[in-house]
Image (cartoon, rainbow, N blue to C red; front, side):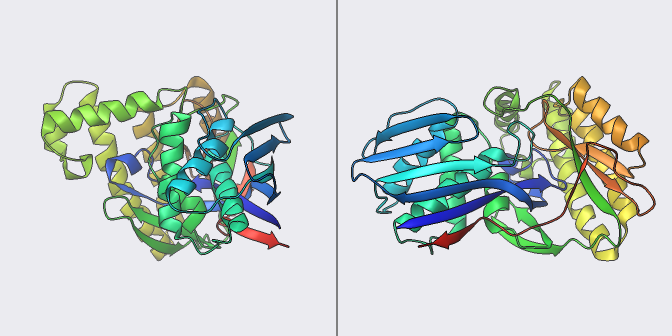
Length: 343
C-alpha cells in the first residue's frame, strides 16, 4: 500500500501567543507545505528520509526512543498514535516540502500533519477525528520536540477551510470559519532573515511567564484576567498579561472588520498587534523590525510579526493600489491537510 499526504503551512492573521492562554486566534492554511509519501515496510521498523535535508532515520515500531530535531516528530507521532489505539504498521516514509524551515509559517505543524495523515492512511484509519489529531500533534511538539506551544498551528493546518480563516476559541476549542474576503486587497509574507525555532528561542520563557502570572493572580488561565489584574503584577508580567488581553480583543475586532469589509481597520489592527508583540510581549528582533518597516514603506496598510517570534516572517496587508515588494509572497487561505493519494 502507498499513500501521499500533504500538510500546509499556516499564516496567523491575528491572535499571537493567545493559544496557550485560552484566548482567541484567526489563522488560515496556505498552499505551501510538506508532503509525505509512505508505503508499508518492514513489520518492525519505521524508516524516514528527509529528502530536502539529505538525512535519514530508522527506529523500531514498538518503543521508539527520543531524538533531536526533525527525527523527534516521526518518532513521537508513531508512539502517540499507537498509544491512541491506531494500528500503525512498519513503514517507509519520504518527506519533502516547499515551506522554509524557521520562517514562522509553521513548518513543524505542516510536518506533523503530513506525517500523521500518512501513518493513519497506512493504518487504514483515515477518518480519525481532526481535533483529537491536533491534540496528538501538539503533544508531540511539547513532549518529544521540546517546544511548549499551544494548539494554534495544529488546528490551523488540520481544520481550516479553503478560502476562509479559522476563528479558534482556545478556552472551549470552538472553531468557526470566517470568510476572508479581501475585496482586492492582498496579504503578503516576508521572511525577516532571522530563523525562528520555538524550541530554541524565548518562546518557552514567555509561556513560563504566563504560567507565573496566573499563579500570582490565582486564575487558571489569562482568559480570566483583567487589565486591572495586569496592573497589579511586577514587570514584565503585567505587560505579558496586557498583550494577551488586548490581542484577544483585536481578534474579535478583526472578525468584525472582515464582516464589514473594513480592510483599512484590519490594517490598523495588524499594526496594533505588532506594537503589542514588540513592546509588551517582547518577541521582536531588529531583523523583524526592518522587515515590518520594509513592508510599510512599500505601502502596506498594516504589518506585524507572525508566529512565535524571535525571528521568522512578517505579514503585511496591501491595498489595491500598492504592490507587495520584491521578496514578499502573496498568500491566500487554502485547504487543510489531507491524504491526497492512496494506491
